[in-house]
Length: 243
Image (cartoon, rainbow, N blue to C red):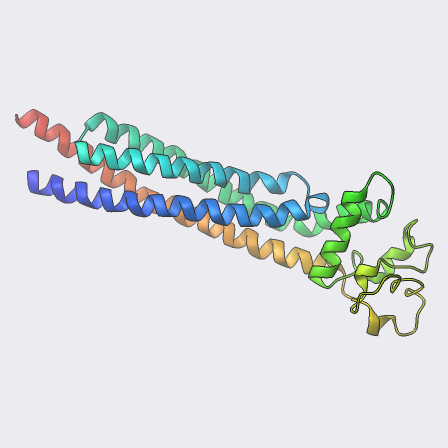
C-alpha cells in the first residue's frame, strides 16, 4: 500500500509541475489574444474580451492551485488532497465554459464585425472619436484591407464626400494618397480592395478556435489530476485506518 501511495504521490507531483506550466501557457495565450481583441475593441465589442480575461484569471488560479497540490502531495495530507480535487473540478468547469464561449463567439464574428464597422465608419475623422480613427488606420494598414466589404463602402461616410478613402487604404502610403480614389480608374491597383470584415474575421476565428481548443484540452487533462488526487486521498485515508 505504501509503495502504491508513493507512486501516486510522485505522479501527482509531476502532474502539478505540468499543471503549473499549463497555467502559464494559458496566461500567455490569453494575453496575446486579448491584445489582438483590445486593438480592435471598437469593432468586436466587450463580449470578446470576456473569454481571454476569464482564461487569464484561470491561468493564475491554476498556477496557485498547482503549488497547493504539490504541497498536499508532499505532506500526504488527506484534507489538502480533497480540497485540491475540488479546486480542479471548479477550474475544469470554468475552462470548459470559457472554451465553449470562445467557440460560440467565433460563430458571431462576421455579424458583429459588420455591424460595428459600419457604425465606426461614420465616426472616422470625427472630433471626439480619434480612437476609432486610429483603429481603422491600424487595421487597414496591418491587415491590408479597406472598408467593411470593400473600399467603396467609404463613399457612404461623411469623411469621404463620396470620393475619398483613408490614406491607410493605399498600398503605397503617402499623405493624401486616398483623395478622390473611389472614382479613380486605377483604384484597384493603388488601394487594398479587399474588405476588412473577411480579413479580420478570419484572424479572430482562427485565434478563437485555437483558444477554445487549448482551454478544453487543458480542462480534460485536469481530469487526470482529479483522479490522481482522489486516489492519493484514498490511500492516505487507508494508511490512517491501518495505523
